[in-house]
Length: 323
Ligand code: UT7
Image (cartoon, rainbow, N blue to C red; front, side, top):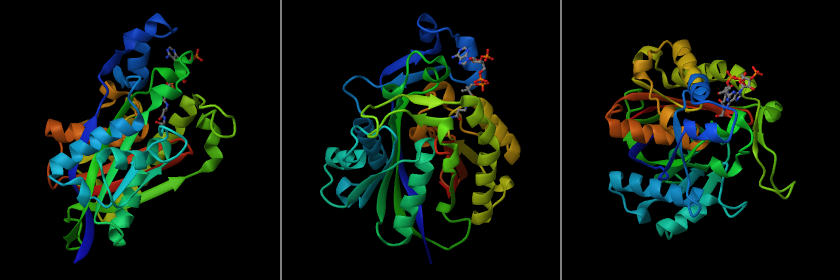
């Protein structure tokens, strides 16, 4: 018998306000055509003034719990991937814990920017495999609209807000790649690339700061690192590209998504794509894509998935799981 961390619920939350590319044409030297052709983004959601990362994360978590039919008091831990926590501290995860009315267990944030959800899944998997928790809410939630420089056309048109969540539960498997649940993970970072993507604020500056990105430099790293980490994770799981049903990639840029799928030898028919509707929601993008793909009927119980993401740090990684 092998312990596995199995997804038993998934859900998401998107703020009501939808902003189409054309809206940026009014205030910036940009066009809908440029944004679409360079990134694949058509629209994104922005949080209302009274919405926060923790409030959106809570809504997504409730949806995941409802699908799983699990009472919040039976959850042992909340692991929240975000770079836009409501406050410097306490963690947004503990705020979610309080908003859910969870009286026991523990909660903490994970900060690996756009790769955050992959890092959170891997850590939650480790909590389950080591026996420290049996049920873990794993959430990705972001309000990147609060760290945008609205005068910088090279970044502010790319990002959006939202949240997605899964409930991971300990279940017994037989130790083969046919098991449901997380089969392997691969995490990487290289801090020497700090200047490619960062926020120029924080406790050392006394400001919240704005996101700064050398987009084309990040792009240069993305496809090769994403294909490499996905390949490593597949090897660890004992599966090959022919076994994969769906790639669920971080949704930053359709050209990166297409390039990575091509390198992995999979057609776009097997790739979950939501970037056109959400923009880049950083750590929220993969759980949002999982939830939307589940609702669309794309990913079904028993399907083999590979998720991959890269972002600031640089930090990147992949998880192979059977749905
Ligand atoms: O999720 C975390 C990881 N982040 C990513 O994965 C993002 C990776 N990077 C990208 O997605 C792409 O690099 C971008 C979408 C950010 C940019 O696409 P690109 O093809 O790499 O364009 P570029 O940065 O090389 O810029 C091309 C041109 C520049 O003009 P010049 O220097 O060629 O005259 C930019 O000034 O496009 C210009 N430009 C714009 N033009 C119209 C930059 N932003 C805009 C804009 N509208 N919004």
